[in-house]
Each structure stands twice: as C-alpha cells, then as structure tokens.
Image (cartoon, rainbow, N blue to C red; front, side, top):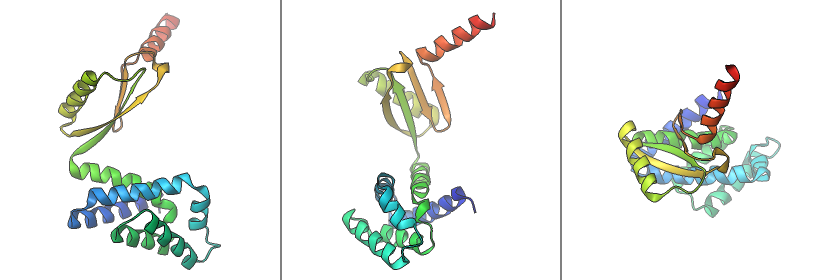
Length: 180
C-alpha cells in the first residue's frame, strides 16, 4: 500500500478522534512536535524503525519520548498503535497529512509568502485579506525572505503559486528577447 494512502488513513482516524474530543488542534500540535523530533534525530528514527530492535524496547523508547514531550494519552496511544503496526516510519507523513486535514476541517488555508526583504505590516495585512477573500478561508501566513527574487512577492497557497517577483519578470523578458 502506498505511503500516502497509509498516512491519510491514520491521519483521518486521529482527526476523527480529535473532533469527537474537541481537541483536534492540540492533538495536531503534539503530533507535529513528535514528527519534528524524529526528523531532527536520525539515531532516534533508526532505533524506532529498525526491526533488529525488539518491539518492546522500541515501545519503551516511544513511551519515554511521549513523557518528555508531554504528549496526551490519545497521541501516546496512537503512536503505540503505529509501533505495533510497524508504521512509525510513516509518522512524518501522517503528521503532514493530519495538519492539512485539520486546516480543512477548521476552514483554514496555509500560504507562504516570499519577499526580498521583510514585509511591511500594512502590505502583509492587505495580502492576507486579499487571500482570505479569494479563498473564502482563514489564511495562516508564513513569511520567508529570499534576496534572489530581487523584488516583488512569490505567494503559494496550496498548489497555486502567484509569482510577481522581479527575478521571474526579468527571466521572461530575457526569454522573449532571445526568442526574437
């Protein structure tokens, strides 16, 4: 079975539990914290995913990690289920899909805005308002800086990219001049 469908199935199940308990946002943050911990520690990931280590030892490591990260009983049980099913390696994908499902459920969309310099607060506010009007959802804005775009903005909302950067405009002009 494909990792994407596995991640979606587990993420959807955890979302349903979170919706029932009215804790889906908190569960999502906990799951993301755990996934970040695994991403940052290749040694930990190896210890949890390697079948050479007995499942009991891997679950003890997970239990200790759950305590250190102050994970709720729900997320702890969820992670233990993943360990029992041999799906710990899918945890980062599950966390990513879970975040997307939470956003859909809550009527939110994430947007990444890249600018050459820090955004002026007034421009940021106008951009957020325009994206919310266009999407019909609450926009969670992530700001990035990339001096190589020279000026303008590159905004990504879901799979859609709005590229108003000077770099892209210069590339298009160059291609047009070369083709003539």
